[in-house]
Image 1 (tube, helix red, strand yellow):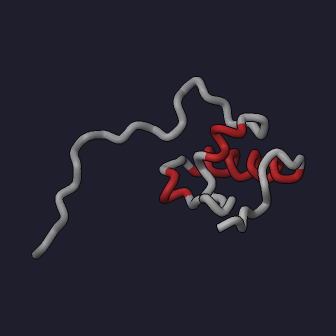
Image 2 (tube, rainbow, N blue to C red; image 1 turned 180 degrees about the horizontal axis):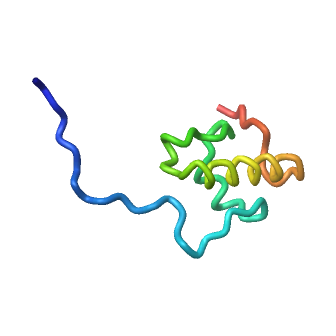
Amino acid sequence: MNRTKRSSRRRLPPIRSGEIIDYKNISLLRRFMSEQGKILSRRINRLTSKQQRLMTVAIKRARILALSPFLNNES
């Protein structure tokens, strides 16, 4: 069998303990959005389900308040 070797080193959590998920924290929100402005999946983000829900709500609020774009179609 051809198994890939996994790293035994523990990955750092994507959100530090002091960071608060808020719609005003655009630099944090952009880390969890694709270049096109789409919300990345939980599997890619490595967030917990609660963090992913909070992140989704914060991104949607930022979009409604025009703090971040709905879609970025510039190629």
